[in-house]
Amino acid sequence: MNPKSLTYFSNYLLILFLMLCFCLSASAADLAAQVILAKGQVSAVSTSGKTRSLKRRSKVYSGEVIKTGAMGSVQLRFIDKALMTIKPGSELSITRYLYDDGTRATSKKEVVMNLVTGGFRTITGIIGKGDKSAYRVQTPAASVGIRGTNYSLLYTSPSPRDRTRS
Image (cartoon, rainbow, N blue to C red; front, side, top):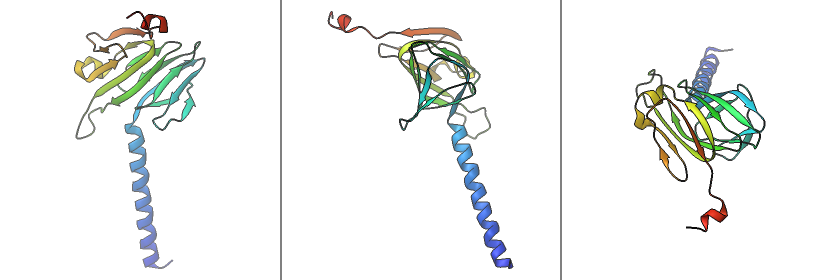
């Protein structure tokens, strides 16, 4: 191999390495939680609409929707050390989950979740224990802020019969 070819080859490897590092850091930035325990039917729906089953050690990403079947439940450990158990028959959208442990120049911490139906119990992590306005859970009926570090939330949509009464 001549010196010119070697230079091109080493530049190519350097560019490939940098692209790989960028891709890995981008996917790590989107990580929201890891599954501790999954029972029954539990799935995650990505922002592109792709559904995958969740099991122990599965990763959950910001923007995904977690769904549990009638006999399913899942326990999650979020990257800020929060714990959450999602109850059977639930649908929870992790709309935005931003957490930086201080290693980046801009340290943004924010949680926005949308409970479509069902319920969960949680012990908040670093985000919920810090700036309370950085942690929000929305439901079709209300938006929930937190004051403590341990709470439960249950939302059941009104039956069609209840909707006609108003």
